[in-house]
Length: 85
Image 1 (cartoon, one colour):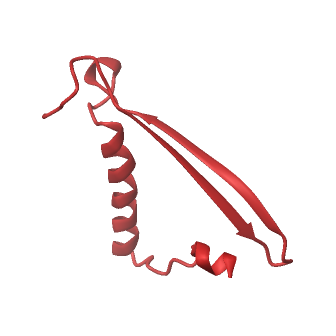
Image 2: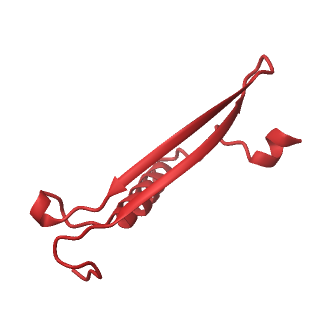
C-alpha cells in the first residue's frame, strides 16, 4: 500500500457542520456537529486506511448501496438558501 506518512504516523480529519433546523411550528434550532477521525495503521490494530479514505470512502459506499437498494428518494436535505429566504 502506498503511503506518504512515515512509519507509525497517521493522518487526522476534523469536520464541523453547523445545522439550522426549521421545525413545523416555525421555530429554528441551531446544532453543531463535530467529527474527529484518525487514520489507522496495522500496528494499532487497524487496516491501514487513512482518515481521508475512511471519511470519503464510507459515505460514498453507503450512498451507492442505498441507490442500488432503490432508496433513492432523499427527502431530509434542505439547502441553506431555502432556509434563509
